[in-house]
Length: 134
Image (cartoon, rainbow, N blue to C red):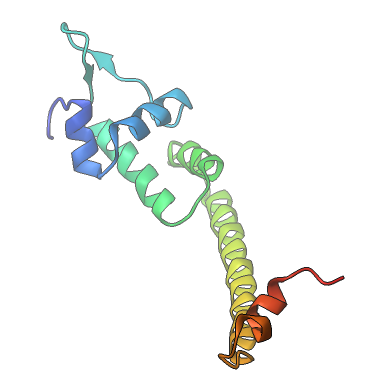
């Protein structure tokens, strides 16, 4: 147990900006902590674990709504993990779609670049491909 943490300590421990921590509190992902006698936020190990979970999920590309759903499920320890699996599989499908889109975009851009004869701008196939056609 680390004991009581300031918002700065929590931010450093999780590599999260203070503004982001406050935002997560405003939107309800991270419960607002108790305050000290000096009116400072006082975080504990539970907050550290919760914020670490949020950060890891965000680093994996889960949306804030997906993180909210995952946190809600994580709090129900005896429940089947079927819903968690469904969220993760849906996210993976989104990633696969994005990869396919980026691959097609790369192929198209590579083709356009390959057509460039390195002449004048007036003959540039890249500029021609980007310009609106009449």
